[in-house]
Length: 320
Image (cartoon, rainbow, N blue to C red; front, side, top):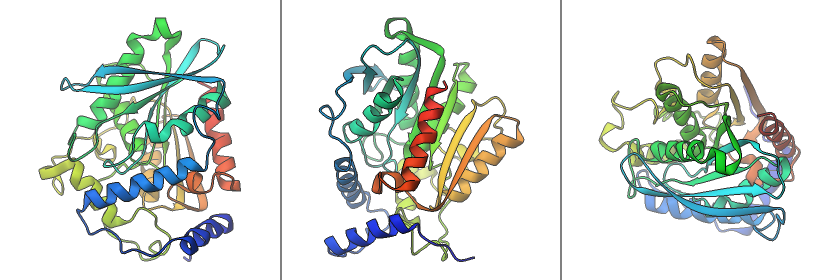
């Protein structure tokens, strides 16, 4: 079956190609180069949105420090809209292939959700692989933010039964991992919102049909997972909270919202995970966006596809 890139996305990618000189892709396992490129890309995508704080006058942010499972100190950022009603909240994990990204680079993304919905967010500056954390480190960092929010719920005017976890790309995988930990540790979780999530360390074999469209490649995926897993990479000794596609059972997990692009290497694993949730009678809303590549919404935020996805996300957030 032939795939077709959405015309609006095609126009954006063509313009980008004309504005920049082609450079060879990073070699497999060169996480430093991949991180540098990812950081530059995220800065450019952030520039397409109104700058924070000036572009979000109703949203205030404050920074806090929490302790992760191994005692490491993690920065979290609390965003809230002025005069918002008490109730629900969202813990957000940024993208970056497990090796790049930061809460700073997602200021405008998170502030945009808060301003549009009135629901406060906690953005987690989790440690990156491989130099700051490996294995369960990043997912435990995000879980620590969830636990902190539960502890601070009375002061922050949050109902601990109405907290969701959300993330995109690597952050979507971490959000799914936190949902597994929350189930296993008896922590209430109202929803998991997984945006083109990175769920399966075994997604390494290229699909020639997708090759012309992929933004995050299979070699990039190899690099990201190898950086995170280290010696466990390529073995069956991978904890399910780190690679949620490996979880033995999805019974008891939080209701889910999952979305992924048709031209994303994470498509198959995201759809398969959603199907497992559905088979277990867990409430699941799945969106497979035709003609969409990885991070389509951030590359072309004004596109029809991105606007429709944002409407769905805001609806889900507002319904908590």
